[in-house]
Length: 445
Image 1 (tube, rainbow, N blue to C red):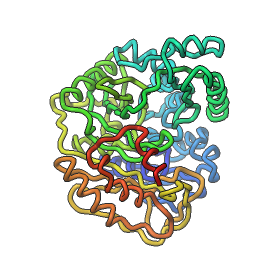
Image 2: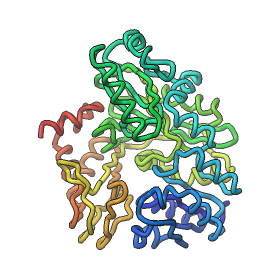
Image 3: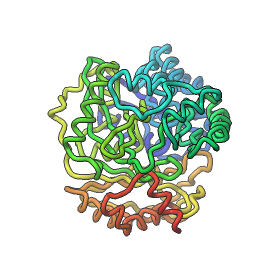
Image 4: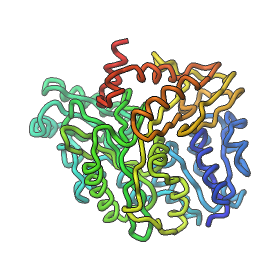
């Protein structure tokens, strides 16, 4: 097993990796910007290295500084967490070139699945159902004919996109070229690549993702699904497992399709294959070749530690499990607690005066926050994740309501009041929602 792992990240995910490594007897190295000198992951790791000033491009995205930190601490593996460099194929290549282990998939798979056009082609070839759309990148001259063949409305998407950037809807031929221009400009600005493709726009789908776990010996498992349909501006807000919309037969069918595809691909590590689900049909949208923010709800219903499994697989171990060993027990929900105004969603950096997290049976809080912690304005506003588990969805909702009422954060605004509002909504209580539901709910005030 690895002697020492460097964690190329910050915040709650860095803490998550520290804890998994400590339970495995592995020493950890935290890296931090000058703004994060007093961060909890820095305090909890065995060693820490400052890698630059506050801007992420000068610190957490500074590849030479990360490699140097490995060299001076004698770390022999890097865990990238999520975000930052976790899906950067070049980073994975550089890590490997320096005789270090990248705890994640191969650079080839990161690159293939990071290109949305190539990912869709690959998924289709592997037998995964895809959204009707263009077979690849679309030229402006060809766009009207392609859109007409697909049928309006259509969705224009950046090939290198993510987080909803470079994504536009064309309801009719009259606005197609205008929306393509807007999508290209946004994609160029955000990703340095204005390549776009076109898909059928589904009106009220759910966002369902399948968690996979694979080793380098050809074994691949699916760990069920997560329903991530509560979104704002294409950003996930709350997730649950299992989905209220699927039954065990549907779960098994799509899970086996994905696991078989990953086996054919030779994928290694954890990953998530994401779908839109409407009228009983699944449509592939993308694959995330990393650990997801919402991975804890899968851990809660399966009893598996996904970070531990990541580390084991990266070290060459076999899974030691078959699909028949995976049981889905109860129901779990995760709320992303952000330091944001719960109405305007404006970031609320500042110092946390009081911090009290809920507890009790089936309650987990993943966070790096504490009383007196100064939330820096330079990074994502996520300060914690409230995860609850119950024997069924009804018990889970009751536990979530109680836990939200117990959660105290003073000094900054958070999204906790938003989740308390959601608990009162019949549609949410009944699991009757889709990817546009939350924005429609918010628009009502």
